[in-house]
Length: 113
Image (cartoon, rainbow, N blue to C red; front, top):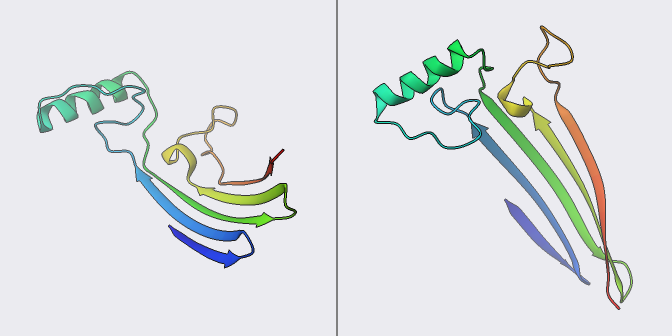
């Protein structure tokens, strides 16, 4: 993560994150206790047998800028690019295709009274 203070109440930042879902934890909403390698393999085998999707790596890149527009208003546009969302699982609405990469944009406003 990199953040730069630009003066006049302005900040800019960029960040990159990468998450890899290991075979022992894929498609599990809560932690599953295991006893080392044998346990991890057992969890992965149970997931496969249950038909749960195989997951891999997801990457996120984000850029943001915060500006003091007036003495009472701060504006902060933000853009995020998500590559291989959810670790590359299949799209439930388009069988045979993976979830597509995503571009997310937004603006946050802070008003001080």
